[in-house]
Amino acid sequence: QVQLVESGGGTAQAGGSLRLSCVASGRTFTLYAMGWSRRASGKERDDVARIWWSDSTMYGDSVKGRFSISREVGKDTVHLQMNALKPEDTAVYYCVAYGYGGNEYWGQGIQVTVSS
Image (cartoon, rainbow, N blue to C red; front, side, top):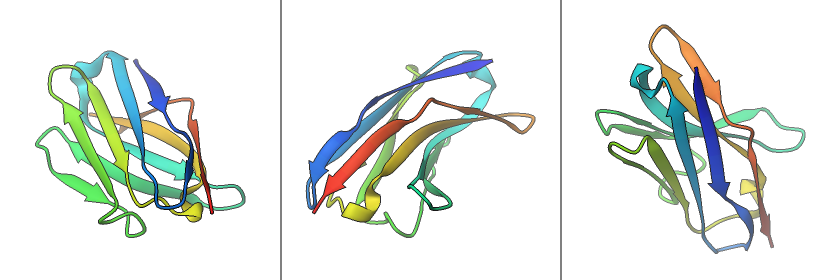
């Protein structure tokens, strides 16, 4: 199993920035990618960003050019730098870890609120 602990988040004004972090522990050698997904109230889940151990990255269309995902090699930690925040970025953000064999592990979620 893999455990994920998220930190950061909170409240920011539109145009501001926030940074999320996620630390993985446990059987992290089984992972090949980590990322962030979000769910806003009353909306479908939205995949925000993902980073593979090859350092390839993927971003959702709604955050391209504003958000940046990075990882700390050897520390099983990923960060999501969120700039130029918009009220529509308000959501619960979940750290997700992807393991071989189709396994997915989810964090408990952390609230991000952007005020206009």
